Length: 190
Image (cartoon, rainbow, N blue to C red; front, side):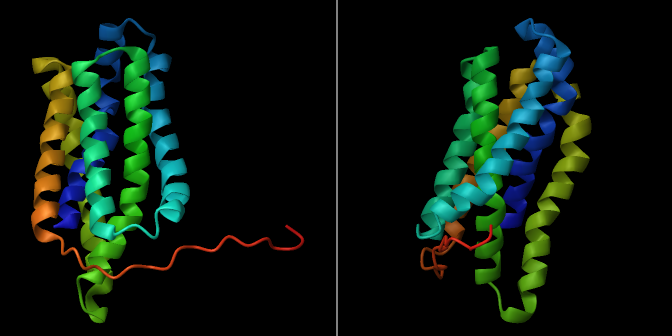
């Protein structure tokens, strides 16, 4: 289940690639400027994964997963209802933050739901969603964006996010085991 939602999250990662020329023309920016939508999303993922995962390790996993899904939905809905270059930059970065942390949380939730001998399969299922997203969103997003406007592609991602939110709220148990918060210690010589 968490792996299937991963397809929605992966879709938002790749959906922008085929839409860059359309969005650049619509917002009146250059292609390199529109290319920042990809780069800043990746920066959000890069910052979000280690920093936010460490800072939120003591939060209940289901609650945090649902909060990440809500951020994902808002981050993808925002450019649809408040388009503009600056707003889309901010939305892409914040959605990237959610994406980065989701890798860690989804993997730990998935392994916490299965027996020890199935942990590897659970992680593989989580990451299988990324492959599904790559295969489907890269060819479909430019077609959808050109047929109905680039905002419609983001609305599709929002719909996937809502499905993930509802499904996770209903199916992920609330009593997931908690990990220990990380300890940051000074290492001499570093």
